[in-house]
Image (tube, rainbow, N blue to C red; front, side, top):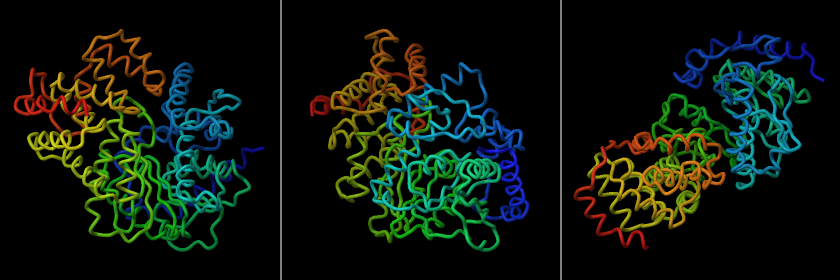
Length: 504
């Protein structure tokens, strides 16, 4: 049983901690509030009192950290259904059924089999599942774990990892507005775990099983940590802040520890995927985090795993190029087609894979369209496969060369293009070809759209080619061209290659 005085005590401890330590946040690079978070904090209510905290999950306190603004019951039910379709694409039902959501905050829950979960808790279930899988794959699932989460929102992932992992200690580092929620929520829902606030100006003595810290306190945290986690906030930080956290992780991880990042790029300070790289942290995994984005044109986050290392400087540039290529291709919806290439490049450090990814990077980051088209022609000639055909189909679609684009997209599907990339290829083709009704087309996706059926239906019914072109152009950083009948000189080159490419 949880009583209101327990919530009051937790809030009082938080506010006392903030009063003692907030001054330390003024000049510390890890505590810098980005433009993104400044805007979110201004758009929502912060620092609930006891009465508000009893129902904080029904208000706008969690806007921007796993929940949308309040809406009608019908709209909220629809959000849950759409989230389930998305999370269910990669999260086993057994994991969802094993979770138990505390009632603190009065969450709006929905029936899921024999369970009851809120939309935000369900969304975080995808994160907790991927964390447990990555821990298993890297051999860290068989021991009590010392976990640190940078930016824990209101505490949902921490709550879940305590249920599915053996946790020795859990430390959360966050800005005051979010730390208020996570510290109070976790302290009251896990009363058996000793909780401690970490001072920002000196070592605090013995730290507990649940530790809460403002960003400047990272200099005084007891390490080493087996796992450091960040979900969707590195991508919103300034570059200096991200660099500060990564440098700290390089010093603080256990010898076999992992930094697990679920983030994207080109949203704030991190402009390219390789901006996350450091010579004292080796990247050993990069793949899409979720099977589909939150919205059809939304950024797609990728899961990256880093470990401590003394990186070979001779290989650093090739790895950097490979990471850029992989991170950019994720934005187009590529997933299963990337898996073997990512493994060969980042785990096996295979030279052929690194060279291919370097050439793909050169295509993405070409200084002008002539260079880009030459790079694409080389890729299609030397490495014709579902992946390169899809890259070419997207590019020529943005350039308005629809006949060539459709042939390349059809070729990519014939060669087994997978996952959301295949859905995107079919959407582009549907906007150019009238082979079936819009409703029938959406039906053919057979659940692979992961809750994006409405988005796709709107795009296809409106034949919104401009929106598709602009999305591709944003990823490629290329111009959008008015539809033309041919691609000029480059089109004639592709015409000669077309048969061999599509029949390879």
